Length: 317
Image 1 (cartoon, helix red, strand yellow):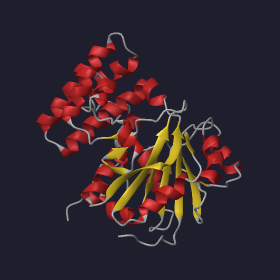
Image 2: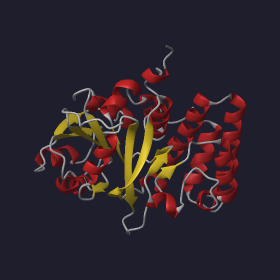
Image 3: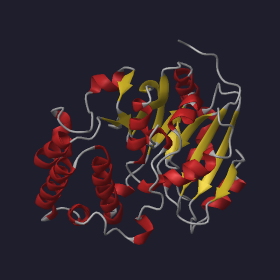
Image 4: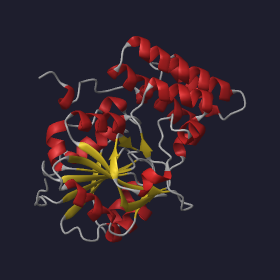
């Protein structure tokens, strides 16, 4: 069933943290990316950057509203802070600062949100070199984790056993998916009212997996829209052992939330063995993953959960 577009328009949320080198490119891409969208506002939420991210946002011709968090509060907390300032029925477009929208991308995503069954819409994402990014994922599982541990993430994806989807046919057509990387996604206003806030206890990584799982559990779908397109620069996660450790710890926390202790132990073992085999000759990130899997609660204080409350959609009824 199709519904008419809501009058509250689109709220664009951009979360920054020392993003001065990439933020101008995103803001420059907004006019073309928002072609066909009549009513919108742009909000830059800054997680206490030490560079000129805030100054760049304030001086840019797109004139975004700037919210200063005053601390590095994490990705989910920044999204929630911005969402709390806009009309509760407004659709959201959540963007990493290293995204570049292609012309008309926002309008195409919003068109899918007019379907009352659709909660989240995601675009086709390209790498800087023009290749299609493997941004679509399957729901995390022990089977996928072991496949990636034994085969490696790329080979496991190619044989269809891993979490990452790399089938070109999937990226060529519109369809329902489990989840996609959170660099760019559009969220309908009706879903916001039903699902509630993003879970701030994840700080960074896995918060989009958690949110899109809750979207599906509430009866809405996550839709991949290949005609809507964007570029994502990315890359820091692969090179930063601290971020790799955080991602590993959050994978375990997410799994423990939805599965029992035996299943979680099997997941941890797959990470320890898989990263351990690659740590001997691989980058430091693999050693960081092993340490995080052995002691996921020993992350630096800045990454420790601040909000352990259950999201609204998971609270007892």
